[in-house]
Image (cartoon, rainbow, N blue to C red; front, side, top):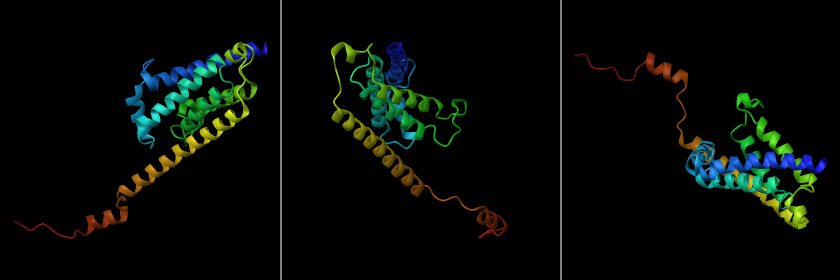
Length: 192
């Protein structure tokens, strides 16, 4: 029963994440495709948006596909966790947790399931079992480092873009200065 449970979780979460990535990469399932996803990334401060959209789409489509098939052990869930972490800390950040409020309820749930699958392994109903594949520890360690590095690079890129946007936007005039200009104009129009 444990192996069937793992299969059910893998197939459902992995399949849905692969579809989510296909929306970004190919415009499948009424998705935005690379251009629309890129514009969304730009609005989140991730520039160039198309590149970040392609990376997110690859993490979701590739990671979700590997997860669903139970192929290459923890690598698929880990790739998908990266994309879900970015979604939670950018698009959903600062909102109440619930999806009805625009919060990170779904990405957090996905991360919990994916983390559990990465730790538990794919089970006997998997491609790994069929082909006798066991991902070496060093490959998993490289994946962890690469994932952490990618998340860090995305957040550094985003912060530098947000900082640059703040510097290029003029400070709004304070209410006091605006009131002073109304009450004491610097130049009065000439009477006709």
